[in-house]
Length: 386
Ligand code: NDP
Ligand code: MG
Image (cartoon, rainbow, N blue to C red; front, side):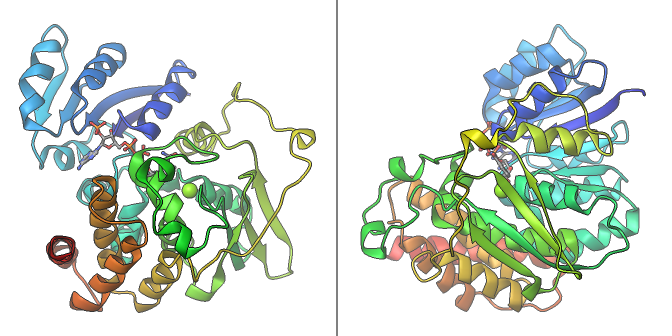
């Protein structure tokens, strides 16, 4: 088969660099046509020299001249500025767009890619949290594929292959529980960002690592799953599984459960999303039950990790509530990473924003953009007032 042309947005991050590892390990399968970074010019330059894409985007305009000069010897176009990512995402000469940028910044480029008829390998879960209804409608209108990269959603997606005629009774998302599993609220009040940044099973970007510690990541994934798999709110369960071997499960109407298992390694779901419908061979380490004689399960502690019930509540409200939840959380995580607020103040900030920002039942794309801006303004004000 001929090679798939890949646009890789957020190529310098945790998912982005692992995606390039996957592409490198499958010579002739994929051709990188575009790369993007926000501020890591050095790595972007190095990647562009190796993969020779048609275009690169450096978000930070102050780095533009550096990247431009470094790539002067090759035929790679260099772009910068906030609109550049959306412009590149919507270009015709590509087959699949991997969205590996972090946070709300994924929304407009993903919309542009879908409108241009491109398949999406979705790592940027925030896009579906913010505007799941709009994105899934666009995906249907344009007949594009939407392939999850998130390991839990990839697990469910893999379990659903061949089950197209069979309704889902429910799904069970597994959660590692993060570094603070079992802690009390009193203990959590004083945890530091260094402690929160140490995830037991996964090596990821800072934002999702904090989200994993606070269980907001699982909350975002619940909303992501709702839209990816067309579920009602009461069809989604969460179970804590500290070993992160069972990546998630689907239950069908006969009661049968299907699960996908493997060592925690994002390269597998990345490769599955890029290679779909094919399973490409890999030399990823193989799982052995003998190394994991105890796979355990427990209830999430919803009273202590309030972000999880807050996310369920925002999902039930629908409209722009998940967009508010996401924006408030982005400000909360950034403030926590700057030591401006404590760990338990993150859910407080999210909850306050959900009550303060006006509710919209049927938001348009412009409404989502405005909701995001308004929530950030409110959240900044709340952080500043403390
Ligand atoms: P990282 O922080 O490691 O990387 C983020 C990437 O996006 C970098 O290339 C970064 O550029 C770029 N970026 C940062 N800010 C912006 C912006 N405002 N606009 C455009 N690009 C930007 O994140 P991860 O790779 O960990 O996560 C990426 C996405 O994948 C997230 O949505 C996350 O939830 C999801 N995900 C990640 C998993 C993981 O294992 N890491 C697992 C499942 C999902 P620069 O390097 O220059 O800052
Ligand atoms: Mg996940």
